[in-house]
Length: 292
Image 1 (cartoon, one colour):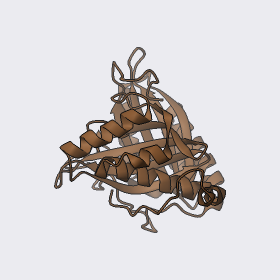
Image 2 (cartoon, helix red, strand yellow; image 1 turned 90 degrees about the vertical axis):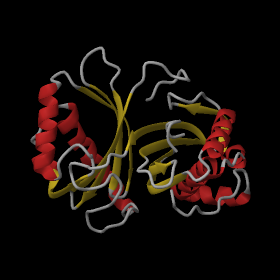
Image 3 (spheres, rainbow, N blue to C red; image 1 turned 30 degrees about the vertical axis):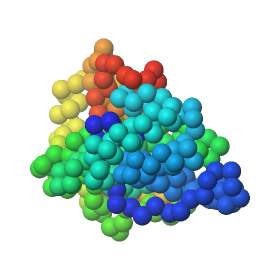
Image 4 (tube, rainbow, N blue to C red; image 1 turned 60 degrees about the vertical axis):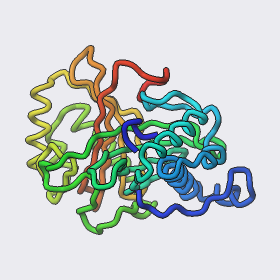
């Protein structure tokens, strides 16, 4: 599910198998059910090599967008078994999970070997009929020394929780981030940072200095270096105060570009915090679905 080169420490709620009465009841609270299923599958497959969770919660015709992995639930089971044999102490350290509609987004630190920094991963899952039907992801090695002073996973803004805020905030925060993202990254208008970003903005991109000024400097240099940059949002997933944008960034015409997930936290009508993961789109893929 994560890049085949990578593989949390979150407690996973008990989940009944799809088709049972308890799942039917849980479907009324679909986001909670979907989150629990995703956490159980990720932990089961990549920490224990558990194939049963795949049989219970993943459709046989599972569609895979990770370019290193072929389609299908059987492939996922084989991958989990092989990785567990090679990395028996691997941890899928889930940091935050949000769900909207039939989509679930998971932000994790995947550590194959204890003591290593591991990889920052965003997984996106689409549900159909109570089971996981499709998967996208992006993965990036965690650097030793981030430029912003923040690691790639912590919550620095207040309140310091990884849980999404109240659901009644979802629609307004999603609208704000969608507008801000379009102005800043699609239209390359740096004035969006003054309009939509908080003066207390916390940055987790390890290559950009902290704060609004750091974002202006980092993105300003990026836009000048790549004047033909094209950013195409593919999907937006929001819950409470967290809004994620999955996009295709192409620095210049003819390039394959990068798959990027940007995750924003909103408080009081302003963007207060940002995490992201960046992965180059490879020349070849083990499936025919593309990364988006």
